[in-house]
Amino acid sequence: MATTEAPSVTALREVLRLHTVASDDPDRTDPAPFVELHAVLRRHFPRVHEAGEVVDVPPHGLLIRVPADPGSPTCDADPVVLMAHMDVVPIGDESLWTHPPLAAEVVDGMIWGRGTLDDKGQLVAVMAAVESLLAEGLAPARDVWLSFGSDEEVMGTCALAAVELLRERGVRPWFVLDEGGAVASDAFPGVTRSLGVVGVSEKGVLSLRLTASGRGGHASRPAKGGPAARIAAAITRLERHPFPAHVSPATLEMLGRLVPHLPRALRPVVARAERAPSLLARVLVAAGPEAAALARTTVAVTTLSGSPAINVNPTSVVAGLNLRIAVGETTAAATERIRRVVGRTIDVEVAEAHEPSPLSPTDDPAFALLERTVTTVFPEAVPVPYVMYAATDARHFTTICPRVYRFAPFRMSAEQRESIHSYDERLGVQDFLDGVRWYRTLLDGLTHESVAAAVAG
Image (cartoon, rainbow, N blue to C red; front, side, top):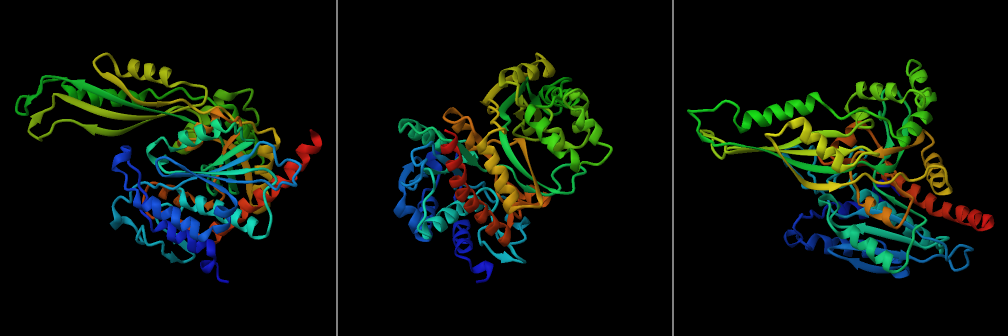
């Protein structure tokens, strides 16, 4: 069977054609595409729905419990949670896309469309892997919960509701696995091998509004030091005074694993990282924005608004800031630093604040299982832990589980990673099928890990 005719590819293409965009106001979200997506999943993955317990999670999410093999020695052990989300970001300017974003066309071995990488590819891959297990008359060695959110892109409430449902049932997962990370090429300066980057934490998110106010008036009589000038000066000060650089334990471990694959000139610096972390932090900052984000809290000016007319001096100018808070820092401390840098004439308002997630362990059987699965399916990749820059639904699960990881088992080039939340999002057909194989290998690996844990216990 040609790979493009594989049932899982057909299912993914159907899912991609559904415009499942969530609004930060739930009343403005069109439920119809989500209802249809649920129907597509039932049609393509009947065994999962027949064998599992399906729970609707408001507003449009799903929790599916796939029961363990009753003959497994760990059928009553803590379950595993596999996550993904159904919603996508808006298409944006459709004219920028090489292929229509909702057509799910397969061209030159790639599936094109909004959500291929974020995050419908992962959703369908999980379902396809579980379906294949059940089709062979098998069941997982311990319960597996599938948690599919519907408002991740707007930082909504669906994942929180799923966590509460699990908490009410007394579910304490062995580990949780959500989106984030990938089998990434060109992921670190000077490293030629692909990296299987597994997120062990994620940076916090802080959104601030900076406001400068004044009298305003006719544009023919501009006053010195008006709101626009003060906001511009504040933004310039922020750029000149970035947050201090430091290296988290997860980043130290990531770099330690990369030492054999780094250019020779960098190896001594990284090898001495624990003794000279400040030097390593400076190297990361100098290596470019992606590497620099590993070493510090970042600040991005994302929105600007001022006068309603071009011939009117504004009475207020507002700048929106999006900060990604480094592990080990807090949103409160970051807010105070911003206030000090921009000065007293700028009002600073917190619009949204989420703390960095706790670090998940890398020295126990759960992470070892993920590592082994990466190297089995993607032998070309070096598995490494890292701290995610972006926020995911996984952060909510840290309240019920100490092992929360983030990994999408798809090969992604730098260009593909740039397409996430942008245009020309796409995923290789074979890369998608290898992702399905990765999840199936993970499910099969639960038997090995569960038996080992039972014997050890």
